[in-house]
Length: 302
Image 1 (cartoon, rainbow, N blue to C red):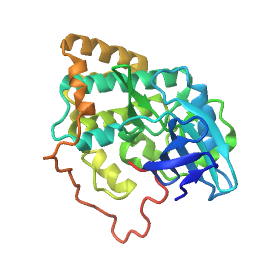
Image 2: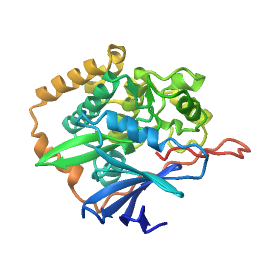
Image 3: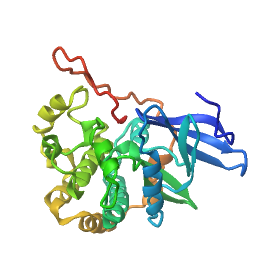
Image 4: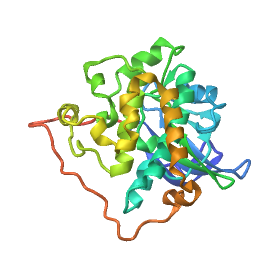
C-alpha cells in the first residue's frame, strides 16, 4: 500500500475496502485537512471512478449525500477526495449488543429515505443500497445519515459505455430484490426493497440468508421470507405502501417518528457509544453450492 498518493496525501489509515476501490483517511499536505480519499487501482483499461465522482458532484445540493471535492489521476491510480465521515450502519450495529429502539430504527429509516428521496427526484438510481453505504455525519451536535458510493448508480443521462461496463460487473446479491434475479431492469422500487433489507439487517444484525455463498442459494432462502416478516409491525408501511414511492414513504416515516415522543438526541448515543465489551458478533453458518468452483468474484463488499 502506498503511504502517499498523488505526492500530496499522506495515508493515516485504510478505513474501507472492496473489490474495486479502497478508502483511506489522509492528510492533505497543501491544506492540512483530514479527508477521505477513494482510490481505484488502474488494473483494467476501463474504470468508472471518474463517472462516480462526476455524478456525485451533481448531487451536492442534497444534504444527506457525501461531500466530494477534487479528482486526481496518475499512471497508477485514480482517486477523489471527500469528507471523512464516521462509522457506517453495518459497523455501528456490529459494535452494539442490543438492537436499536423502535424510535431509533424509525429515525434511521427516515434519514435513509431522505437521501434516497432526493436522489430519486434527480432521476438517479443508487443500485447498491446496503448498511455499509450509509455513514454518520456529526455536525454541530446534529447527526445525519449520509449516503455514499455511487459507483454502480444509474443515471438517465449516463454514457452507454458506463451502462455496458456496469452490466458486466458481478455484484453481491445479499440486499437485492428477488425481482432482479431475472435480469429485470432496476427501478426505484428495487432501491427501496434493498433499503428494507438494510433496515432489517440493522435491526436484527443479520438476514435469514446470511452464510449462503452463491446468488442461487441466497435467492432460494430469500423467497421463503416475506418483506413484512423482516420488519417490526410499526414499519410495515414500507412494504404495504412500497409502490407509492420514496417521497411518500419518507413522509410516513417522519409522521411515525413524531408520534413516538422520544428524545432522539438522547438515543443517538446508540450511534456514538464505544464498543460494547460483552458483544459477540453473530457468525452465520456457511452454505456453498455443491462442487462450486467460482464464488463471488469482484463483488462489492457487504
